Image (cartoon, rainbow, N blue to C red; front, side, top):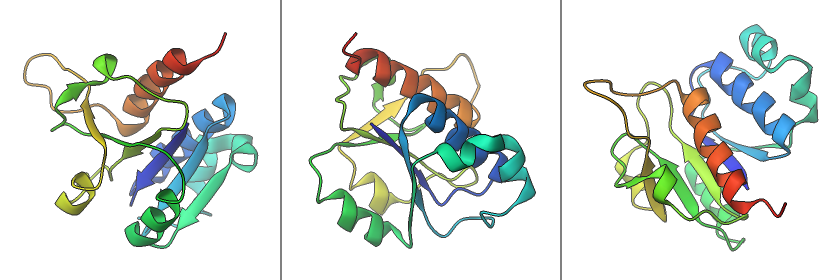
Length: 150
């Protein structure tokens, strides 16, 4: 199981996601360009001393990420407000990569077209979206619950 962040722009969210990944022993792919530098104080504060414990791989572009991703036998699962499947109805596999878009603009159409599934977190009323780190934790928790061997 991995998490991939497509061009994240808020360092605090990225730090929180990396910290979560370190605690749950899940790798993180960062797809550039990033909206901040990795030495950003907000990223470090949110990630605390967990940043060095995480398995983080940087990719210079979407194309570089896809070239590496296609080598493995994994599904690319996009979490999006325009998803067609509730995340609780999806059957996760241990080799899946959960992809999250940038906080400001999500992902472009060419990313949507290259994913194996587009999941949504159902929300009440006129609400639009959750914080990306919260959404990541919810979906990752469900994916790990489904794929746990214990």
